[in-house]
Image 1 (cartoon, protein in one colour):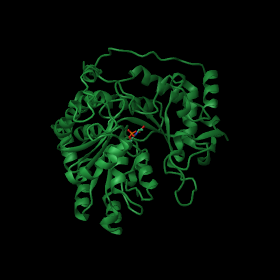
Image 2 (cartoon, rainbow, N blue to C red):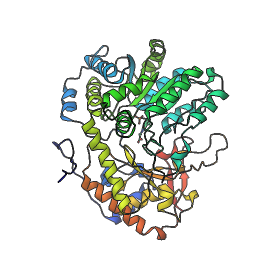
Image 3 (cartoon, protein in one colour):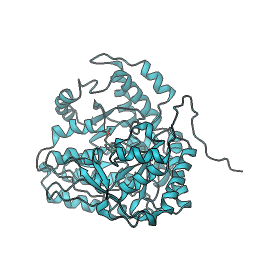
Image 4 (cartoon, rainbow, N blue to C red):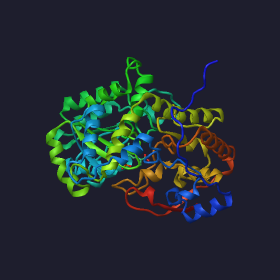
Length: 458
Ligand code: F0G
């Protein structure tokens, strides 16, 4: 008999979880103004709000913390991180930052000015926020197929080279500080980008003389998909694939809270010494001195160790296998989601699950609240609230997809938790005809409103 799949680690430390009643949850979510971000974590049973900074560190990472060097300048921990940058990622120059968006801030403060254009494949919301806040444009060049949730494609996160070419043709290169390739493509469902696509995008960047920035939050998960789905890579190690991916990039920005499996941290890395030097000023101004940039020595140590563990095949097989397991369960219950299952999350197709709720009443948000009420599970809306208003017309932007993202923290929950998530979704799906109304906004910020938005029942 073939042996069943099992995790590539065992558990050494546990954290209790509290269950609650439906009555309690009804009160709590009302007090939270129907915004799941406003809940206390103790009011949540299974927290799928994000996979960012919520993973479990290993014994080796915890021991690396103890060896942290907290010197202000030139700490050993900085050099540990530098070794990992060079050996695992192939970048000689980098600036630490306290998280991914801080790395973006350091980079974009240096290279982006009003009227610039940074095309990408579904820019992450902070990335888009940093670009649009500087009155620059972030045109989306993701392949059209990404918005058909039922289409099974191995690399549904790809950038469409024709769309990119159109943008690169339209503007002079002085107006294009970088092309932003996000791997995996979070917004499109944690979908990977193929090596062929990375190569093609890089060739276009070279042709037009613009820099390629890889937003690398989930680069290792992307490498796993290349190994398991792209011809010619099946016998390469994850680390070999990672090195090739980054060989095509000029810049990488990284939220280390994802694939470096730390609770806080990030960096921006450069091939060019000159650009690294230019960015130092904003690092010092906003983050800290260039050898710690917003991170403590112990955290840089844990990050360096995490980069090594996060690029090991056995770990990635367990991690992505768990997300796929949730996808399989949802298949059993015929619940539609962005297919195939992504690397870090399942993105439930809220429009198909709640067919009666009008889009003006925020379908994915409504599904998020229903799932919380059902079982204390917290996901996050990837829909019209996240999309913000159009910066020019101030009208609501209704994206093609209304998704509820269920992000799975790394090494944190067991497959029993996954079974609960699937069953809870099935219960909501079974009573979908009775859910007819959603929510309306009572209070919002002008940009990145989804974190703090306040809602009431429509
Ligand atoms: N880029 C991508 C692709 C991301 O997914 C994130 C964060 C960032 C950049 C910003 O990094 O949070 O460290 O400042 N994504 C989290 C999420 C918040 O839940 O998907 P950060």
